[in-house]
Length: 431
Ligand SMILES: *Cc1c(COP(=O)(O)O)cnc(C)c1O
Image (cartoon, rainbow, N blue to C red; front, side, top):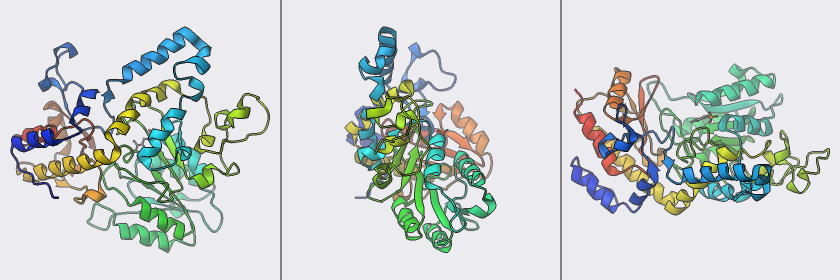
């Protein structure tokens, strides 16, 4: 059923009352608005309208306790914590894999927790980009997140190829801001004889465009290439089915929609046909070694027959711990229910923004909810930076990305319809 929106505050109040996920909001800390007083004086008006969960998710109220527990275990047990901490450090990534697998639609053994996003991208490019004279090209989206561009450029150079020849960027057509799916599929087909890998962001960080991971994977495979994805803006935002879609590998960070905190540990997915294959080429480290023999300290790397066979170093306990507080929230709320709320929340935001007559901008994110996540990107031909500054001064937390884009991302776990209404109401009074 199509939701009907109007511009009254009552509409937002009604949606919040109907929202079965509304109680999750109280499980997060909201930051104070810029210039507000000390925390003890918090009143609702001093809290920011926070639409930046696509950049750094809010802190769950349970995070402090799980981190305190690790500090306490370290104080009381020191090295004994590896075996005897409440959640023994030796295996503390294990309980994180199942909830992550549910979020990305994978088998538990296809998911691992390690490092950070760009590092994981390099590690998996090492395993899935093996250029030869025939197949050496990588297809990616033009305007990908810079870190992804740098990772791919430097991998290509490392293998002795010329990035201007080996990297094929699919870009929007002249005068358009979004990439047409047919153009992606055509490019894959055109380069089918020389294509080694298709590597896409699941959602483009700048435009908010959600790509069809299943269709891109199928096209890459039909061309004899691997398909990998950067899920930074997808994980915890849009439900996906990596295993069923047969995607070869994927990487993500945990500090955006997953609310794992700044610098939280990243993650990776490797399809079971490689995860189970101990001979699949990879960089080795002792934490990827089979546990049964890890501490024998012997020669000869024998990887685990799961995605954790790509782990290199000792568990980063403090970087992992915050996920223990945040992932159970996703299980409780359910990623599908979150997505249903998110579709309505973002459609409501789009509707209200379209009613504004005092600001001149285009929403460059697709209007079709199946082609976007929570985020809307507002493109200002002029004055984008000044308008962003004004939003900040008005207690709205959104970010600005050159050139000209203000990104607005209501997160369904903790944002309300009244947040969206308040945002609209403030903007409607801008001169
Ligand atoms: C946020 C983001 C990153 C960040 O990578 P880190 O290695 O965690 O710093 C990379 N790629 C994309 C697409 C992102 O959105």
